[in-house]
Length: 291
Image (cartoon, rainbow, N blue to C red; front, side, top):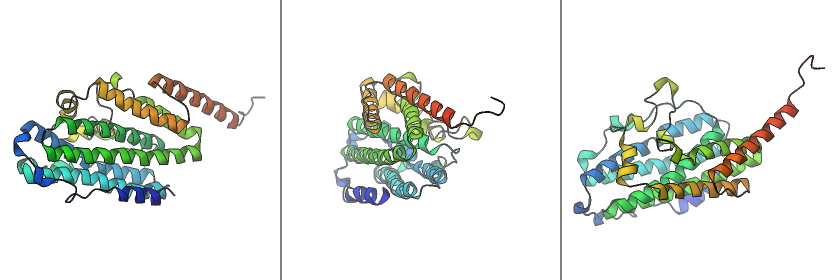
């Protein structure tokens, strides 16, 4: 099992909301109204770890090891929301999200293949790590800069934990897992080809609720994310390149092959798909009457 060691490693570096956040260093003059509103949106977005956890537990009912790890992931992700809520409660109480605003992002996600979802969230953690690092640079108020730095490091550690489960999946399922991970990796490393930010909270997850079936669509300001990325924290091509490079670096480790571009990874995806096709063809019984 991976969960016991992952629990220990994450427990060893867990930060304390009272002791490790320098609340007394707050400088009101360095927090603009614009910046404060983005903190509210991020607090609500992080609350969506709740429906994501419900999805993980439902779709991984066969995997008690991973489900146990989700308990740690859920705790730390909800703490991200909580520390942002606490920041607003202390310093901008008029912007604290209502319970209804938080609950709006709790809605059921359609069932999805567990391996694809695992890779999707692995890439999402990499992207969040970079988004929050950039947010820490953009903000001018020292306490929120520190908070975003703490959160960004958590996201990186979560990505590392997901990677361990992906390695286990390859050991257990071989090309089936490689195919799932390569397919989602190509998608998530191709954000420069899409009109929207590629992150789990910005993807459609409930066909019956379409088009209001993304986390971002259920925020008080559904257009906030794109504005935050493009006009506020200025998550430009250079930062996007860092995300892609990190995804490619990790899948290179995962697949024991060097990928320097999304095109390289896509070629590998097709290679694995051909192998799976050949395997299925060998395993499939010959149709009656073929002789």
